[in-house]
Image (cartoon, rainbow, N blue to C red; front, side):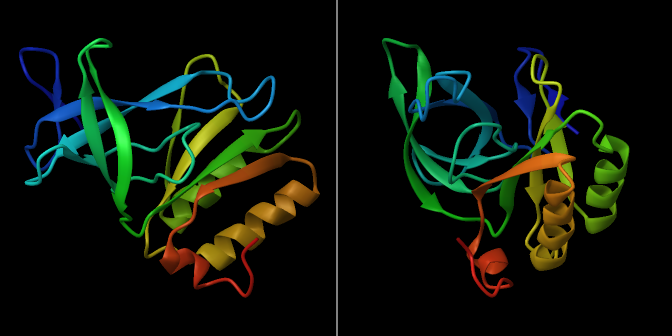
Length: 173
């Protein structure tokens, strides 16, 4: 749960100050991603200009909850901007798109039992960003989700799969 300072800026559970970090997104196709910049919350570490990401991205690829990234101040834009990836947290991030007639409640119940959390965003009602902690058995979760993909209930996009979770799979695309 976020605690908010009188300035309106949240403070992480560890007590660290949090900042929004802008991730500029390359356009992959004409209609994707639907935004050009995604801003994620991050908390300061002891390393100058290093931030720990504290939410799950919807559109940024290669970044998951808890990952460490380097940022640079962009004075013209008046914000911190992603510069480079530093290290992974062991968490993975996927996106789930719910198709018409898909069992959203059933999928969310399974995610919760598996130990995952997810975020949704206004304007993207059929999309959730899922955080998969390192202790979750990704093979079992992935197999269950792929069965739903086969039934045309959902689509999934594996946006950041950690070494831990890749190691649980026989093959990873």
